[in-house]
Image (cartoon, rainbow, N blue to C red):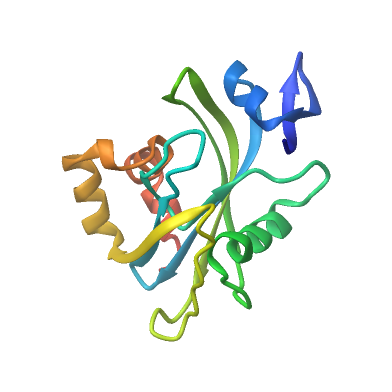
Length: 173
């Protein structure tokens, strides 16, 4: 299993990803919102994911490898999960949240948030079925309304981003 940067007794060390979530350790993460103006590309997580399978999330959310920069991680995972290459990611902010994600697992993330502005009509997307089962474009304001009406269809972190950090995601749009 992959090791990710997590804080244990105040020290950042590499820890097995599943252990991080089982223990609810505070750890580094990266989230990306690929946008065409206010349209956002969201993904439905593959059913084989060990937490939140089948739920809708922002374009890409992941954990950097030990020693990997957040920007490098963002670019790598856009390619790995969605086949998206050649986009410029823009750092927006660092956020922190804690959320139960089912099965006794906890995401306690220190997230570097990125956006990427693209042309939805020309963006090439190729889903990795181990990671993503579907994608769709939706206006981010409509998405926020959908999430408020049917929160159980969406990941806890997407609910948090839209409820508490929408202005950060939309900064500059």
